[in-house]
Length: 337
Ligand code: PHE
Image (cartoon, rainbow, N blue to C red; front, side, top):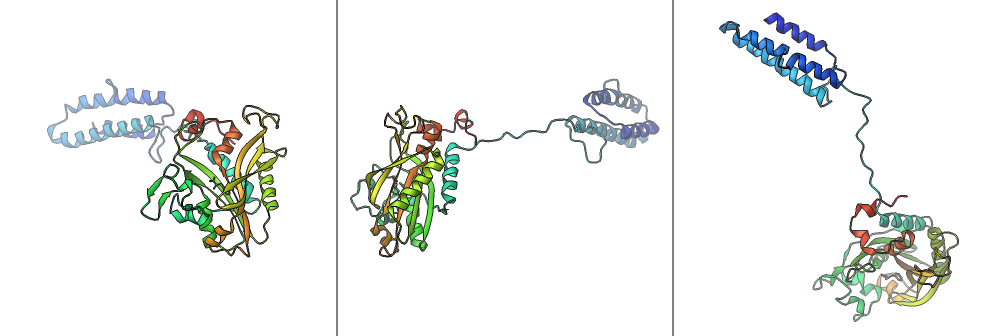
């Protein structure tokens, strides 16, 4: 009996199983109902009592070893140094590739356009105090934008803490801590208390820009925005400025870009005007510079701000703002570089 067990042990240590069919043949031969192990257990019945303990132990070990060999082949994870099946031709497990969110694609593109002309990126907190979101930006105490209807207050008893309504708050932080010349853009999420619809959402994304130096002119602002529009929408893009009002800039303007769909002839997207509004801008009000510790007699500058959703809408013709935050894969997987 001992010799038979020795023999089987030697035999299995030399076996090489190269495919699943080999594994099945192995199973039938050694572990099947008419297999080698079964006949050894039959033989075991005749073993004298005093040897039963030792031989029984060896038989159990052999059974365990046979089962291990089979399990490692079947799970395709052979033990180290084993000669058993590894199928090197089997295709690897693929990891599905994600896609980049359209707002991230557009944000990155805008950041890279401005970084080529020397703008750095600055970020700040989404929960802001009244000073950074409003007061330093020359908002009068009774300005409607401070109203509960527009602003989400977190705790108005602590410094008027609210969710920032624009990333101009980041620019205040930059002006308070850095010395001019300053060239920075501030991308980030902003919040306004609006009813959610295809055209409005209670949060969206902005990129605001700030340039402070000596002798900055309105022409510098116009040229910067012209360069931006051409880089983003193509060489044939034109811009036009319309007078507007913001508390923190004087003079202020709203900027339209020529409709790239109809080349200015008029279509549904531009509502037959040939122009699409994309951003607000102006020369930084001296009150803002002084509030942030920059001498307005020595320095001046310009600022601008745009909505990333709006630009993405124009680039990708997405006409429902809600799609950007619904995490619907059918929508998200359509965007590639
Ligand atoms: N902060 C303005 C907004 O949120 C945009 C803006 C920025 C306008 C800078 C002018 C200058 O609408």
